[in-house]
Image (tube, rainbow over all chains, first blue to last red):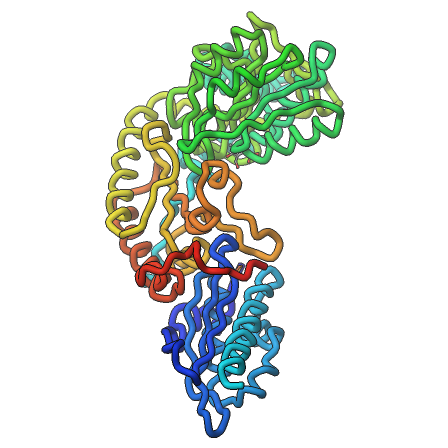
Length: 127
Length: 406
Ligand SMILES: Cc1ncc(COP(=O)(O)O)c(C=O)c1O
Ligand code: FES
C-alpha cells in the first residue's frame, strides 16, 4: 500500500505531540480506542475561556501510521477554531486530506471520536 | 535514512531464488521444452530425466524414496491434498482429524472444509512456549481418529514441534501423521521416516527455489498411504495429482535441494549467530520480549514484541529500507492480531506489538546492524508518540482504565 506524501510527512514529523495538564479546567481530553484493538488515541485541547477558541492542541497515539497522521492533522485543524467549529470536523475530510485507503478509514473515525471526546470533556468541566 | 538501501528480513514469507537455481532452470524453458509425460521423443526424455533427477535429489534431502515424492503447485496445494485426500480415502475407517490452532491457514481452512463435508476436527491449544501438549494430543485421539496434522516449524514464530514424540503417539494409536514442513525443509534436518511422519508438505519458494512448485511426500511402505486425488485429469504422479509437470520449477526445486544438502548445516550455524546478534541488539531496549520458546526454534527466525508500540506503525518507520512482517492486523477488515501469537497466550496488546524477523541465505552482518539501528530508532519514535507508553512510564495501571473498545 503506497501512502500519500502528506500522510508520510505527518507520520514522520508529527505535529503537536505531547501532553496538556488535564487537571486544568480549560483543558479537555479525549481518550479513545483500546490497546487490545491495536489503537489508542489521546487528543487534548486547551481553550481560551474568554473567546472559546482552541489555543493549543496535543496528541499521543498508539496505532498504525494512518492513525498517527490522522491525529496529527486533527490537532493542526483544531488550533484557532472555536469549540463549536471544531465539532464540525468530519472524518471524511481527514480521509480526503491524507488520501487514506478504505481499510484505514476507521483510523480517521478514531480521530473524529477523539476530537468529540475532548470537546465533551471540556464542556462537562465548564458547564 | 538511506533511500536506496533495501534489506530483506522476511525470508519466512518467501526466499529469493538462488541464482544457481535460476541458472539450472533456464534451459528448461526453451532449449528443453519437453513434457515429462511425452514418452516417444528426446524432448520428453530430457524432461523426464531432469524431473527424475530432481525428484531423487529432493527425496535424498529428506531421506525418502523418489517414488514417495508427489509434485504439486506449492505447500497450499500439498496441505489440501494431504488433508482432504486422506479424509476421502480413509472415511470408512474414521472421520476425525486432530490439528493445532497455530497451523497455517492452508491446513486450518482445509480442516474447516472437511468439517463442512461432515468430518470432525479437533483444534488443539498450544502451551505458552507454542508447543503441543503431548498428553492433550493423546487424550484427543479416539477410535474414529484417522489423522494428526501438526506442522514441523511455525511460520510466524519459527517454533519447532516435538516431532518424534508426536510420531510415537500416532504410531501407538495407529493413526496417520501429516506435517506441514514448509518452514523447516532445507533449513534444518528433516526426515519424516525418522519421526514417523507419513505425509509431509513443503514448497520450493521457502528453500531458495522458485515459486509455484511444491511437494507432498506420501509414505509408500509400512504403512502404504494413499490420498484421493483432488484434481481430475491425466493421472500423473501415481494418480494422486494430475497436470503436466512444471518442469522448470521442479528442476529448480531439485537444484535448491542439492544446494541445501551441501550447505544447510553451515548456513544454519551462520544464521543462528546472526539471529542472536539481531536479538541481542534489539533486546537492549526495555520492555522488549521474544515470543515463544527460545529452546525449540528455527535458527534464522525471531519474533519480538516491543511493548506499547503498534507493529504496523513501527514497520512504517523503516519499511522504505527493510522488509519484515508484523503480527498486528489492525485494519477495518480485521481487528484481530495474529491468531498464532494469541494462541501462545500473548495478550492482544503484545500481539499487536510484534515483528517477525526472518533471516536468510543472503542476509549479512551489515544488514543486521542496519536493522538494529533502524528498528531501535523506530521504536523510540513510536514510544515518544504512544500514550500508553507514557502511562506505563508514569506508573498508571493500564488494566485499570476503561477503554472504549470499538
Ligand atoms: C507453514 C506454511 N504452510 C504453507 C504455506 C503456503 O505455501 P505456498 O505458498 O507454497 O502455497 C506457507 C507459506 O506461506 C507456510 O509458511
Ligand atoms: S489504528 Fe487500526 S488500522 Fe489504523
